[in-house]
Length: 485
Image (tube, rainbow, N blue to C red; front, side, top):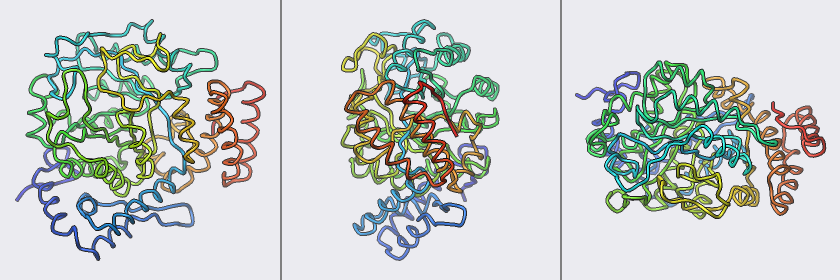
């Protein structure tokens, strides 16, 4: 008998191979069980309570049954509930961020990434602190307030000290009315001591994609370098939380392994974090393998259709209702539009995936020589902001929860009670107003202020609504910035 234990700190016990295979078999056997599927959907549906909203979430087996089901009527209900959950806990807000690539030096041999050590024809580049500052100014001039920094794993070229120095530089840059208020970090698995240092540096979320939860495939895809160690990589989030980082972000790279296997592993990882630390993942990202230098997605035979991809996102939303869900510019505008209805709550905008890709380039120029992957949605941030508003979403540049200490279980308790609506909704409108005043095109500004005026009426508490309205007037007329609840 195999050992599956969500509370274990051993990777192969909380992400158990035999349990995943049994789950996939169970889902296949029950994919046409209308009564069971309907029960699972009803369990997932958000329930209004006296203090807000409540969602029970789903186990990895329950969620896998939904993913396997091909019954059209029940699938339609699944997508509807996913949208209901997202609106209940996050409203119609969509958080905006951008990646900042610091260095593509890497000692790993990952077969799906152009930064792998054996790729000798990609230029290697590492930003100096002056170049980091220039990139941050360029990002601020676009209107960004939240960054996700990225770097390859290289203890010589990209030691933790370099990452910490970059974070300090990023937070120090204040250009015109611009400021980066939250730095999320996507770097290789490291030690508890190093996670403590990242926490002390003031990072927001620590993000680490698992790539694949299939141990044998993982070791094949990572033939050389420190990333080859499956257990060390998979157990990184536990070390991060032990090091004091409240918010961690999960993700798999869909296309490397069978999607049903990856989905079950991802939900099991979320269950593990909840069981051990009392708080699940702050975010879950859903990237797919994309073309890049020296990388052809056709080399991997686990590609999935847009329809399956969208269903995966909807099932994640039902299974882990309180998590932030991220879709990047890897995906096209059309796919991103559909994913917004599946529970997505964060998108990147105006992204460059090359080292030094922002400073010195216009909005329609982009260097390709050091890109980690092709950017499918190449619209400017202004175009993304306008698109979101025209589709009924509030683009939010808010970082208030992180800066007010509402992280980890404190954030989740607010989210679960529904009280976060009295913080996030006005904060979104105030940070959107900052963007409209400082960076928006005339057409975007016109759409934006109509939205701000309409959405002010949807703030539940009259006192909060009045304060938010006054702050927005101060932003527009008195050049004041950085209000937050």
